[in-house]
Length: 163
Ligand SMILES: [Zn+2]
Image (cartoon, rainbow, N blue to C red; front, side, top):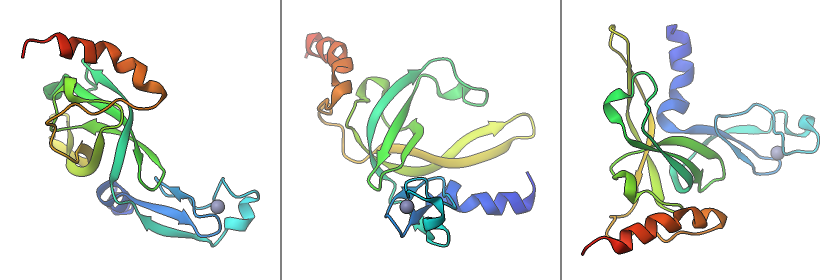
């Protein structure tokens, strides 16, 4: 990666720097230069401003990854989730600091900046956002929404477990 490209990408990789349409208020991450929500894209030209996402969000859905992508071998199994941020954009990311059976729909998470992967023998290390639970996981998160049914089996298994 060129140095110019590295610095161009750094704000969004490290800080969740998105953009916001001041015409309709929609937030984008990664940032966009025009707003697809506005009836005419021309309305949003010059109206897009940098916008910092808080990094707070909630798990919309998740999967437990057992077959890692190259560079993630040391981390399996891990939780990969779709996270709906407080500001609107939905991000995909690894959820850390939980075991795979603690993951749940509706889990409150926040973005944290961690090493993502090491690339090849050169050991180039990529950093980026991952998600960690916002609260201590003393109790299982309450399943919510249409995807809650998917959790039924897990909950049952948990209930059957000896105390
Ligand atoms: Zn707009």
